[in-house]
Length: 83
Image 1 (cartoon, rainbow, N blue to C red):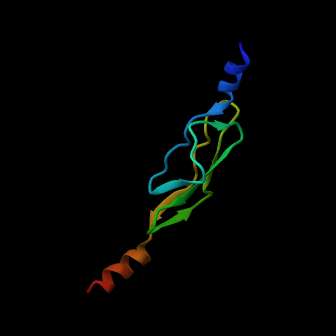
Image 2 (image 1 turned 180 degrees about the vertical axis):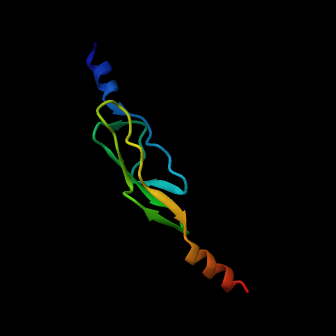
């Protein structure tokens, strides 16, 4: 196995997508092992759980734990301001 092949095996592709969230920071086509991807919920959504995922030595990302839920308070407040 060449050094290039070994290096390729030590990379992750794009981090997993998360509903109602986006990646923050510089976007890359590949990420080094132990890289951490950080997520932020879209406007109008509240974050639950840790907003990161890690690139593991096997070249796969951890499953992101972040969940972005619709903010009921903001939704209700907007609905009332339009009346």
